[in-house]
Image (cartoon, rainbow, N blue to C red; front, top):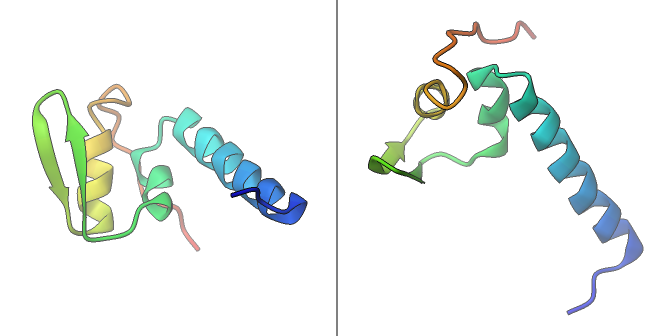
Length: 73
């Protein structure tokens, strides 16, 4: 299946935004890119992530264990 140029641009934008969020090393910044409930596969095994807080907690060790505050809206 070949995507239309608009679809390709949208996919590239989401991946770029996710990379940018992950690069901040703010575990809460990656949460919006995951549906809940979900499961993440890590070297420690399967990690259930039923909430945005659980997603952030799963990413904190990967991001150097930094405790980041949720962004104010």
